[in-house]
Amino acid sequence: MGLTLIPGLGAKGITKLIDHFGDAKKVWEADYLDLKSVGIRKDVVEKIIINKNKINLELEVEKVLKYNLNVLTYNNFPKLLQEIHNPPLLLYTKGNLELLQGFKLAVVGTRKITGYGIGVLNKIIPSLVGANVVIVSGLARGTDGKAHKLCLENEGKTIAVLGSSIDIIYPKEHNDLANNIQEKGLLISEFPPGTRPKKHHFPLRNRIISGLSKGVVVIEAPKKSGAIITAQLALEDNRDVFSVPGNITNPYSEGCNMLISEGAKLVTCTEDILNEY
Image 1 (cartoon, one colour):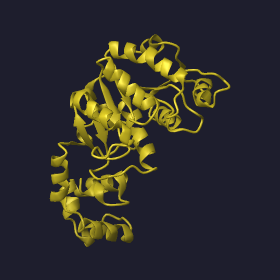
Image 2: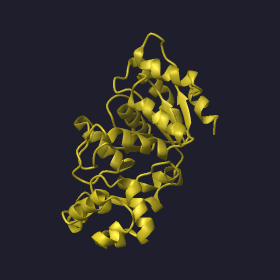
Image 3: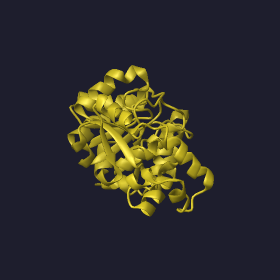
């Protein structure tokens, strides 16, 4: 946890250090000369030493306990998430960890969901819930939030992956939804307590959404959108991509229609998804 709090070190850098020293504790206790012997740049070594001395690990643990979080390291991740090309090293969670072992599909789409998109969700979410599928999404406005709500309303299981820490819910209007999810589902974030949402957090969150899931279902999405990024990440990690076709005059369906033209499985009903499995 301490190593992930060092700015600019990153998962690859941490992994390299752990591979060299044998475990995270030995990395944390290494001095300047020890770190320099690994072959990393001098400025990175200096950054590690300076920032390490600023981090109070006991205080960080107190925050985790205060918010009643579970902390998972890479070895405790579901196998699917371990397999992606840039997995996180650590996740903060709150809720039912057993959901990580279930069959998971991501459902994503535009924040500006239309009546058509809502109708599609009303059609497929209850059927997916009935098939005991765990719905994974990102708690965002629009498609994500409605997918989570429909899942809970149908007594289903859902996982929300956040672009902020679990103690700072974004958007704020989803506070009640997040509370319901932590009671009946699972909240996940790779960001430590006290982390506010930032623009670059959301592509990072998207790789976890797709990484947890066997496949990604895109409901409505412009060509340039977080949902399309999630679908592309899914393809890179050899996951299935499903796409709901839309009106060719609607910009919020352009991304979905593009995915279908590029080989995504066309979805008109839940069976189009479930039959793949």
